[in-house]
Length: 196
Image (cartoon, rainbow, N blue to C red; front, side):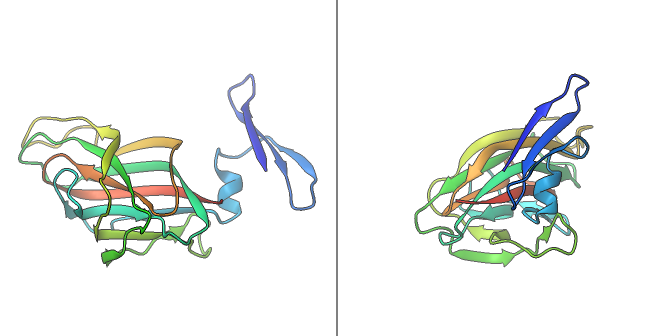
């Protein structure tokens, strides 16, 4: 268990309880360092620029993180990013979408390899795809990038958003990056896997 708080100088102090129930105060390090060192934080990103499906299409192309129904984990979304590589033909906004089905996503058309943020660590229970058939009804959860002039790349690319655990995906759920209109680019999602 860990508890984090801000010190008067603005830095983060973490109080941690280790496996032997010893308490320690960790004054240095990043917000997610303990979870990363425990091997529980993962990152997935497109390895080549790709065309994104339009809006909340259930035949999704882009990037989607799915939590298998039998994972025994909740996925806490920490960060997400998107970078355009081609100027869009129409005004486009980019955002995170979520969805859920008790059966979970079962059609993983183009699986994507992801990595542990503890470089060299084992992968988790997640499934990540560049193309998948989504189930249930996906809904917009958090917008990352607003509309901009068609035919031009905005100065906000790449856009990195600190979700900081505001979205949690339980087994059977999914979270992905979506675009309102056709775009081409790279996406990344970083999450922590926590036992239920």
